Length: 188
Ligand code: GRF
Image (cartoon, rainbow, N blue to C red; front, side):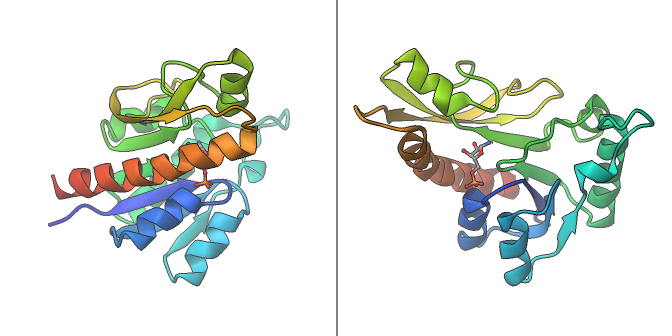
């Protein structure tokens, strides 16, 4: 029996769209905020869930990562998910979920890790003046942009690149990298 995958999103969802266009089995699209990706998935009649970060606050009105992660875990059970692809998902999950879903939660990042971790990877890349960058697909852990690397693709930085132009060229490679590797991992 083939594995059932969830895609976690927070934004535009162009990588999610590439996964759907590649006809890979998507059992759930889950977002941590209202976003274009969630609306696109719903239009494509894929089951969607919104687990909003803003409803997950402790008594000091701070985001509670543990409770949020528990809610996510319940959705994975509810939809019978075996594999999670975080494609532009902006929340770091609590370590508890990585114990349960070891080797089953994957992330994609717009740099050649371990270089340029974090939310501003493409801007940091341009600032550093490197000439080659790219994207990395890796198993996620509770530490941001850490974990065993599955694949990487290189992208040349061009003179005159802005964050937008460079990020879009990286995403062209990311979409291919993610769909190709997911096809293989889902078949294992
Ligand atoms: C990708 O570059 C991903 O690596 C990063 O966010 C971007 C998501 O793009 N974490 P999109 O929303 O799929 O267009």
